[in-house]
Length: 445
Image (cartoon, rainbow, N blue to C red; front, top):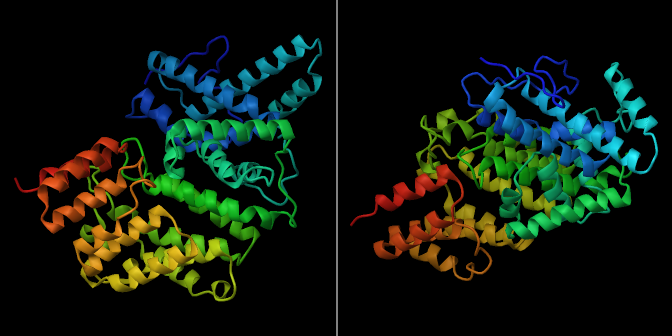
C-alpha cells in the first residue's frame, strides 16, 4: 500500500493521533470509499472532539469540510493513511488554528489562550468544556448541545443528524419530508443560533436533562431510520448508523433509567434492528419481510424488546411521544413473534395503526396502515386507504411504490407499471431502486 506523505499543512500518515477516533481499515478499498466510510462513521466523533477543544461550531464544521476536501485530493494521489480518521482530525485541527490565528491577526490580538490550550492538549491534557463526570460520551455531549432548548425541536434534530452522524443534508431533508434547500437553510439557522447565543458545549444539569429527552429520542429515532432505510446511496441498510442510534439511546437511558420515552424507543428500535441480517441478500439486494429467513433474526434483541414493552415504566400515564413509540413497537412485535409471515395477525396490526394515528396523525403512518389494510382486507381496500396522501408525500417514492404493488395485486398491470416508473424515478437509494426495477420487470406483459 502506498502512503500519503506530509504536506505543508497536512499531517504525516504516522503522526500520533489524539482524536480517540477508531481506525478504519482501508485495505481492499479505494480512497474515495474509505473517505466516505470515515465521514459516515466518524463525523460526529470528530466534530465533538474538535468542539471540545475549540468551542467554535462555525469553525469546526468548516474545518472538517476542508479536511475532507483535502483528503479527496491527497489520498487518491498519495495513498490512504494508516489512520484516516486521525488524518482528518489533525488536518481539521490545523485549519481551525489557522483561522483563529488569522482572526487574531486581523484584530491585532494574540490568541494566547487558544495556543496555550492547544499546547496543553498536545502534551496530553484533554481540554474539555465540562469535567465529564456526568456524561463520558463525546457524541452524547454533542447531541445535548444540538438539543438545547433554545433551538426549535425540528431544527435540533436536523442539526444533530448533520453534526453528530454526518448525514447529508439531502438525507436529512428526506427524513423531514421537506425540500433539500429548505433543510439546508434550517440547519444553517440552527448553527448560527448556537454560535450567536453562545450555547455552551456542556452537559446540562440533572434538573435540565429531562427537558432534552424528547428531542434526543426524536433525533435518535430519525438517525435510526436513516440507517434502517437509507434514502440515498448504494446501501440497502446502514447497520452501523442504526446501531449507533441505539447506542445513543442506551447511553441516555443509563442516565435516566426507566424514562418511558427512552424505554419505548429502545424497544421499537431493537425489534426493527433484530432483522438486519435477514434484510439483505449476499449480493446486497433487499429481502422483503415475507421472504426473510426468520432464523437469522436476533432473538436476544427481540426478547429484550419484549421485556421492555412489558415493563412497568410503560403501564402508567406516559407522554404522547412515548405512547407513539410503544404502539409502533407493538406493531413490530406482531411481526417478531409471528412464526411465519402467513401467521401475522394483520387485523391486529391495523388496529395498532389506528391507535397510532389517534396519537400522532401523519402521512407515513397512514401509508404504513394502508399496507396493513391491504394485507388484512385485500388490495382494493389498501388502495382506498391511500387516498389523500398525494399532497403530503409528493416528494418521495414510497407512496408510488406501495400503489404499484397494490395495483399489481389487484390485476391492473398497466397502472402498476406506471406507478413503478414514478417510484423508480423518485427513488434515491440504489438497492431500493433495484428492487423496484425487478418488481416492475416481473409484471406480466
